[in-house]
Image (cartoon, rainbow over all chains, first blue to last red; front, side):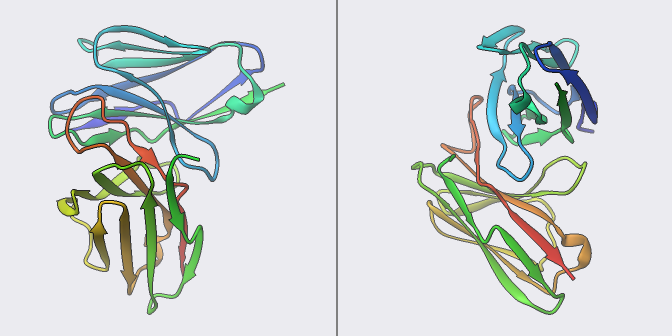
Amino acid sequence: GQNIDQPTEMTATEGAIVQINCTYQTSGFNGLFWYQQHAGEAPTFLSYNVLDGLEEKGRFSSFLSRSKGYSYLLLKELQMKDSASYLCATMDSNYQLIWGAGTKLIIKP
Amino acid sequence: ETGVTQTPRHLVMGMTNKKSLKCEQHLGHNAMYWYKQSAKKPLELMFVYNFKEQTENNSVPSRFSPECPNSSHLFLHLHTLQPEDSALYLCASSQSVAGGYNEQFFGPGTRLTVL
């Protein structure tokens, strides 16, 4: 079957670093996406990984290990506006996105 | 602003009502999607349209009826819904339905409550 696992909720402190993990089992693999969703708003694209390794984009980085079925999103220098849900999704062999339930990140001052 | 708009933003309806959700994308994309988002659950893909043709229907009950008159507009017609259909309904678009790096752009969603 197809399955995406990520923690339900995480808490971190403003200015710190947090790592949100995602493990997956999907039929076929055409890449992994991370999206950010603020409460009551649309999910917005953060990153895409299809090859193993780390992709860095400003304060956000995303890592992929295809052999382990594992990814993480790393957020540095946390700001209060980073409080949101972070959605992990893989693209399967039919190019459909399979979504995790999302990780709600709470940033405390 | 993602270039995808949805109306209405909020909708309350009774189980015998008929209503429609509207989605419009201003990105020149060819693929459009309807998703259902329930609290603490993964996004559920409902329908996919590619160049106005439906390519996916993920076993969605017939009380949900999609319509795609052109590549920029997508509707979801609702009738005789159940309380468990209460959720956030998200519309998304992408350049195509295939290809690896195929970022989907989402609208803000319609928060639907069925009484």
